[in-house]
Length: 329
Image 1 (cartoon, rainbow, N blue to C red):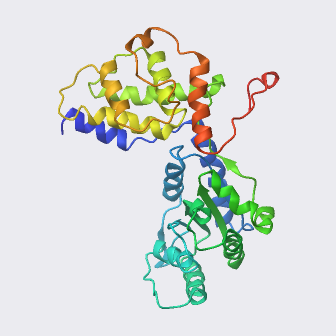
Image 2: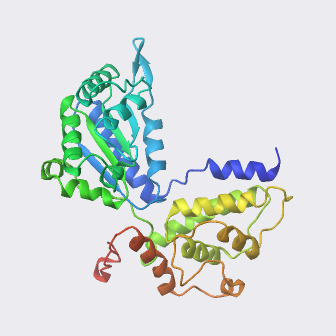
Image 3: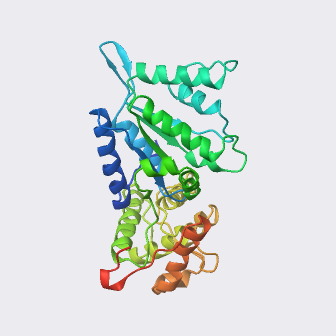
């Protein structure tokens, strides 16, 4: 295997265990452990921008509670269900059945489908159902009214004392705004946000993520020849604090080395990789645009514009920083 291919595989399989990710993971694992122990059902929602790390979080939860055989029977404690788009009353229960790997009879009614779904969840010993891309329930074209979708989820949780996780982009909140019964029985929204450049602890964590990827390049014989702070600042301008976009950039940088022998990677290499992906930061302060920028510190206002752009694009308000609280949200 060539060094370039090994580097690409290392980057594609690397899950950076950064603080925001670990904070969400530990809290949700505790909820699952409670559910497996027979605790009362919960409805949890994790809301955040695209590329913040929600899918990686779902994969980690599924790995932590894998399917197994118990007394010769299939046991699926945690079931991950992708929500289709557009979604309909029949597609909701059929998506659960498909996630269980079971055939779906298209000719039966939605009521019969729902009954079969509940029976199969009970047989599989499922305690937690995770709905991926749950914000599809409130997007244009959905054939299930948001209030009805909320009622369906509430009934699902009540049916066998199931815990339900909903993952999605910020518009998922509309589901709870349209159904007060769902909202009042759910836990507070868990916001999974990008790293905020105004908070020193956030920038330290982001820098650690950049350094983790840079180390993989160096160990593979492709060191990135930029000063460490400069690489962090340029990556922040590109990503607005989104670790998923940072990962995408690093993978693209590695892909461009596919036919290159080990060598130092230059600013020009980084610029080519940045131009090959969709940036998340502000168009007014483009990343890797000027080689001279690596010699000077990026102004805090430019870094903040990258973060603010991500928040704006996802209909999220920029948190107010209170100086007397030490820069906490």
